[in-house]
Length: 267
Image 1 (tube, rainbow, N blue to C red):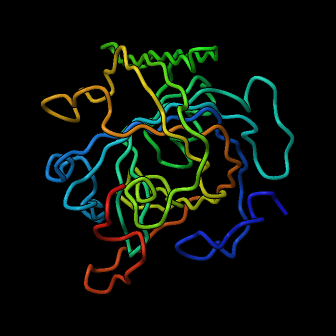
Image 2 (tube, rainbow, N blue to C red; image 1 turned 60 degrees about the horizontal axis):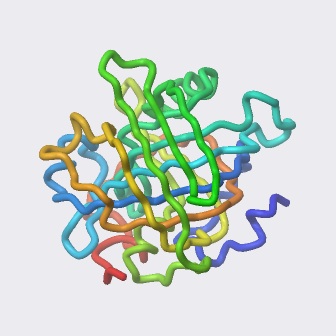
């Protein structure tokens, strides 16, 4: 059994019964979050997905990190393919009572990974030139998207400033981070859910300096202010991922209630 399954009690719904397909490890991760009006995001998210709000507001996040050990369940790591940086822009949604993540964009350095995620997971990946460095002043992160005409760059430095802890249920940081699926839309318009599992995030308060952020261009107007309103760091979490599964969207009146849905008290 994969080490991620030594804890499952924190999940808002049971681990899927079907076999998981992929393994990966997420390292040196930053959660940078800004609150935004839900109506500003509504045109950017499929109508089948309800935009989650906490105390009446939606949130948008920028998440830079490193991936390692990325591979199909039964295969060994492949040098030059199984480890790479990733950077995503996301918000939070619910479908059929299950809260998850909706990605506006994802950047990565591996051309095959970008192609595969677009083709099989229906995710809006972009090929990027990226550099991640670790030093006494924290993690330096640089990304420049390569497959677009206009430059899209992100440059930041971040570091933890507290001891690790697990977010308490009912707090804003728990609402933002403890999500165990993502949603995507296929080119034909179908909604898919991708289930994931890992231990609760080992969060740390973070200090972040953003030098440049073009990731919100075309998404939010006026641009969101920097620095982020909330910033958290996580050193490492081991993850398993299931293959995408098509979702038959229920009407809102038939959707069951789960602990992560609805308004929660902020931390």
